[in-house]
Length: 358
Image 1 (tube, rainbow, N blue to C red):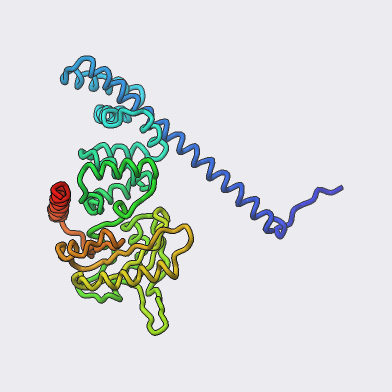
Image 2 (cartoon, one colour; image 1 turned 120 degrees about the vertical axis):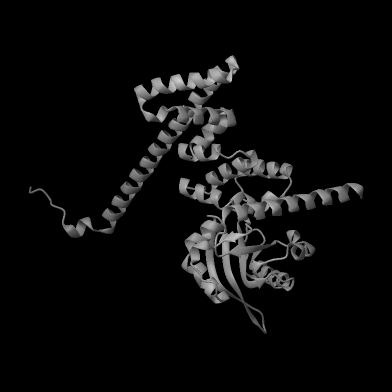
């Protein structure tokens, strides 16, 4: 009996395509598992080396001895294993082991972040900031490049949680670590950096809206990776009138709709009423079973913080943020954000004192 030869038509049939796709997926998953195991092994190895050196140095309790030990060990390891074990590399391993002495935490992180992530994170001096960037890198699966971008744009200082007292931040980050559940405090940014849109000095609200949609990937990257775009100029109708929301998103992590309204000028108190109407309409007509109540973001060119405070927006699910179409010099941005954080924390302290008195 002659050997059957499969025709081109048979090979291109749906069955064979499905078989091929299934095999390709299996290969991709296998490669990913191998990459994860290799990365995890490297991170755990470097942590173990750092811990072993650190244990040795703690026994001697002499700084100059530690420098000599690391210098000597680095020379010998570099000869045998290459430049990955240089003096600076060993110092990074020691710092990693000092900052994260808990082996269980390291084991978990090693399966989510690369050694390149770890190097960047270990350069952050402030413990709360370091914890924030580590948790966000894991949950939102930031690449090394994205992590650097977030640090350069001072994401922590622009996130609503940074204005809270340090004890509150630590509590929220610990809860985030346990639940992996994002909250508005971790999601809201102020200001939002929209320097990727290439807008000139003169533009309309329509231009801004169009530029956001033209750069929707970058916009979502700025807001957070769990944002999913749903609609532009979302029509909201009553019996007698139609109203239109600029942008509507869904946040997967928070499981809720997010309404975004763009304002070319300063924030005005009446913008709150407009957004409250949008949120009530969405809650009644668009919110699905299992979802949390919708929240809103008003993006404006400028805002008076005192105006915002009088409105007590924390209770309404509305966040007001300034947008910047150009990234200012880092020193200027840093000064502005640190001043805003200091002011906000001072207000929290005053509020706490008033509550204690009453």
